[in-house]
View 1: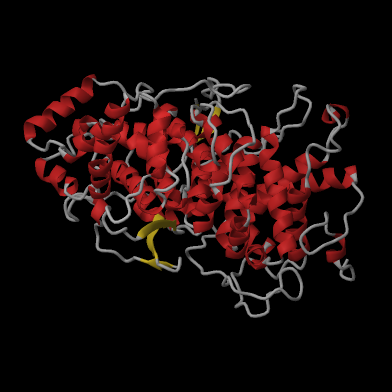
View 2: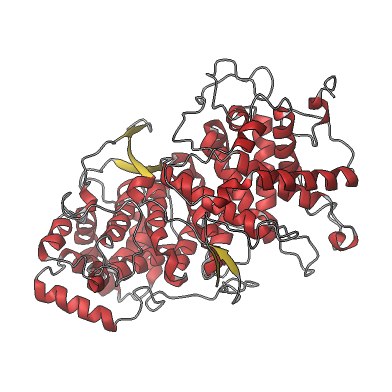
Length: 616
């Protein structure tokens, strides 16, 4: 055994290995069994309660990923290449998967699970290698890099740097993520894979540990091949309580990507892929798709998604300065959200709700200041809904008004009912997002940190570089409340309208309302309305117009140069690694592994402590 060079026996061509061995059914099934056994040895984390300060290190994983395991490199490469080279559609013959049993798929699933468990490493706790390296030597061999983390798998992953390796990984993950979206005219003719959650965790780890990979992903419009499947999963899972974890990881990945300018720029590519989704039909860009799906999640997802609203809107804020032309459908969706979030009873019913209004106003300001020319649809939508902005400017803050708003809350429907948002027909061939089947098992998750802990504010300079604005004073302008009064909790409370006042902890006061009302960034929009509304009204009276297209044409050729306040600097809220998200990923990942390994049911009916197993 010691004379063998195991690097010659890597399972699949790809990163650092060019030779693709002949498929061997026996080898595949043996490897699958061994990986299941390893995964079981690695699973101690399931039997420890979640603790924010635990580093999650496991002696089995430590040994497996250390220099003591002389096969660490070929094993890492085998696992990664096996996952990224897999093509479930096979040779493109319909119904192929019904004729031949695929020994590869179970191996790919186990490989993906073992890989993400070995990469469970808190990146906030140890700075990995820097981004800057040369492209000589072997696949993992960056000459001027400091030694990375002790965990060799994390180390190898962070040091991949060849373009062709990045291309192989990205294409492989995009191919597999898009697999459930493959629409064919023959039902069940193509094989559907089930391990997209493991792939999303793997993609997250790649972007988190290897900044060069992240930049490669954003360098071309290939990032859209990751975006579209994620939006598909988010939209599909929005009504299903058993898939809350999937919703979170999809949103976290988009939050991470949205911190980079290139992501916003890529979203301007026209969206022509017609994946059947239960959303209104629109003609536009990938940015429109993102906004329409986010609107759908917020207005028709289930209650437990409310903690994600901050993240969803932060993503839209981050990309907004780069959006060249929103469709009318997307523009109306954004204004519908503002309308819903700025009702007095919603604003006054939880301490953090006004943040959502600040985020939306920031989106409008960014687009008006930086992308006015192509966005006549949004400007027209703002003019049509101008009363919403006037109501915000004149928001009442006296005790009787607050009391009245909260009374109304008890009678009111959910704030985000569909009324007021014209729902067009959904795309052809789509099925409505369904709730979980009763009795579906799900695993509990720890709470995610608030958006202020998840992100760090950076300012975009004239030359496009980012300057961190941290550490900021305890409260930034849009947080509203004075620092000593209501600091936002680290572990987020649900934003249920009843959360605070019913239990007697928190109730809105006139001082509290005034503290943030004064900071609402309405100047730019008010100036726009002041200039454009009289002109639009005049056109309508002069020409007896009821026709939108004429007004849109006028707005397209209009300009506000010199009339608006000086453009504000662009603020980006970039994801920052922290122990709270590391803990969230650990519980999510092991929950997925627990539920997906039913044959044999390795962990069922054992005394698992990391999460609770619940029935929907």
